[in-house]
Image (tube, rainbow, N blue to C red; front, top):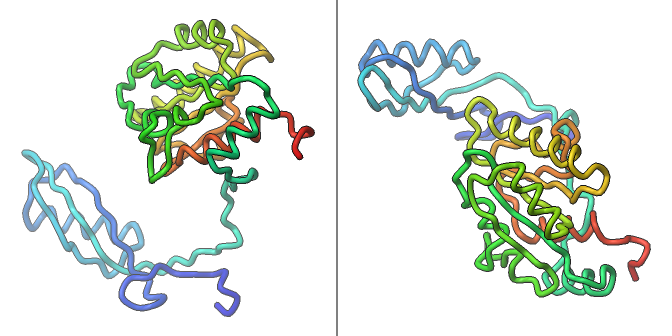
Length: 248
């Protein structure tokens, strides 16, 4: 591994291949359950494996943490990820760009759609208190921000975006059972496309289970994943919405 592009997991010593994973089996706690967990770990390529923690979580169910070694290698050259293609701007730079290049306030709507009532994600991006030490979009003087909250219907969001002449619509999706976040996002994109065509606002979605590379497949302009900060979103809006030829 001289070039550093082929790596193995690290646990106790470099390159030992040690990994830790957790899962639940529908088996009552006890020796038989631990044996089942070790069997599953072996089928996953973790061998030898140790059950380092097990606990009954309900009648007939046991939660496990398993630790052991894998022989798999990781080829870093084969890793394909969505990398940021725009510069990160400070709040002052964002406001200055909007003021000088757009010459009006940039209108942003945010919501959780469908039955999703988890507003922690959209609040972290929009509210002044922000996230990870960064102020939310409401902090910006040159952004007109409206947080519509939770369980907003897609037709209502389309109507509001049209009425307020939104430049961008930000949607957070935390509920992911049976890929609800993907279905909701495709419904969102289709509704805006049908109602507004090319005149639709920029569509941005985010949540912990999204793959940032899926934007085109979902019909939206940008997908943000876990750990996204308000500064990243604000910088993207400037990059995507403001005339680049006017940059000094």
